[in-house]
Image 1 (cartoon, rainbow, N blue to C red):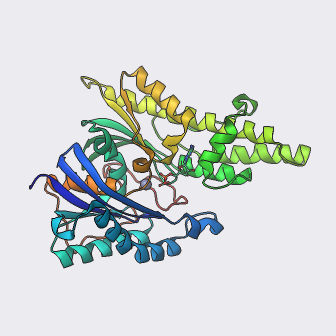
Image 2: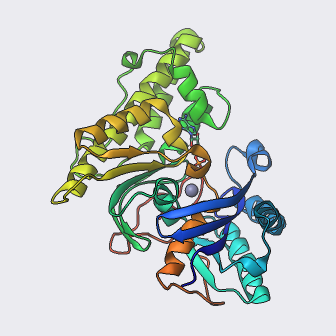
Length: 365
Ligand code: KG4
Ligand code: ZN
């Protein structure tokens, strides 16, 4: 391997078209030279969710522009790139295909090696990119499309300790916002409303806390919010600002409790027999939530673990994380070729059964 490695990364598995250039001096030490993200929020806004066909077409139109911008911002040509890393799954298949085809074209045209990256590995390895976190560590991925607790031991070595069996937490935040007439994306709106609310007014459930293990469920919680809303509307004819705030506070507290307790159980498993300090890292848009973060920090402290939350721009979907994961895989000898397939489902931990649930943002691996 030549060091440092300069990698071009491409990401198009959901509703962000992204390209990035990254330089990795050695695994655990890298610098983002450019990171371009074109969101598709406007294209899907009228439909209340991501429309796969619209997403795929927009990716196909935007990818080469994003690549050009990333190279320009990094002030680098393709001749200085060592390899091309691309999200090859899991995600909405049309978008993943657009990215894989673009990467294959670039690799063939420039004679560069190709590395297919699992999108979830990109998220899970981000703490190494941002904070140089050493293996092994525990990662909690919480976004609009993902919810998994993973032991991370290497760029291709993950053990899934648990995950959602239905909705992802961000998806639940978005649905609750919709139920209450708040704008999208719902997470920040629900958090804002919750600040003025009393979490104790509604006894929302903490799904699956009564069962052992680290799996989670958020869809029943969303139904409980729907029932509470309908009860108030039936009694009073509508929701006041206070009702809305109390529902948001109660819902947020329930999500925070579930995430904290399931993470506590995962940390207990992860730290058993481990010498020295370890790290609990979070990634995904929901990690921006102050109450959820505070709960996770408390749990982390209980185990004497360091808490790492990468900056939001690298927590949400981006191509720098794909370039980074690709760099570690490339350094470990991984090479793909023109047979690289786009995969709608791609569990990080092949030893575990697939998690259920389609979800707003496509298949959960
Ligand atoms: O990681 P992300 O940008 O995209 C993917 O889902 O892949 O996460 C977006 C999700 C949305 O569902 C959004 O409502 C949620 O993260 N989110 C939040 C907050 N900020 C964003 N959820 C709760 N509290 C927040 N402050
Ligand atoms: Zn993601």
